Length: 142
Image 1 (tube, one colour):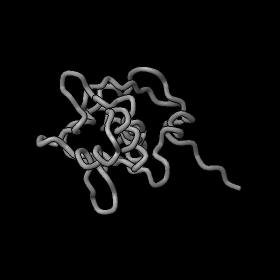
Image 2 (image 1 turned 45 degrees about the vertical axis):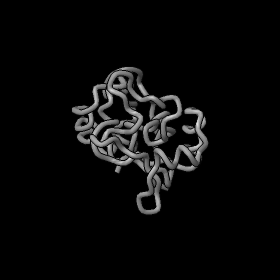
Image 3 (image 1 turned 120 degrees about the vertical axis):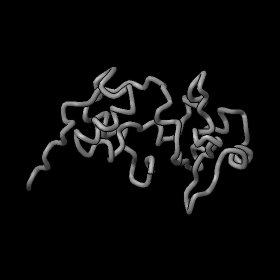
Image 4 (image 1 turned 30 degrees about the horizontal axis):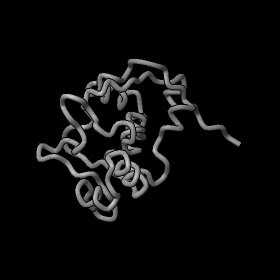
């Protein structure tokens, strides 16, 4: 049986979230599951239904956090960062280790131009990166 070639990041990648907000601001969806809705709602002291009515919208057959009028994430605050960081959605937890960013060194470098945490901080092993990859069915930032 043929063994798959090791990915270009087999030696690991450095990343440390600086909480700069580059991935939290601007256009895009932040996908959430009913389980994550319940978790964030609990963190904020709200019932899941009340939280969803206030902070979630349906996009096709998926659920997304709403955005502020300027398209920033509803939970991003310029002065304090993500106000739900401890219970943030899986999409946010797995960033920057999304398939589209790991596609090639060029894709990773392109992201580094926007994200100051790329190339900084601890070395994430290939095992850690694979564990952080979104599971099948877990959306990334499309």
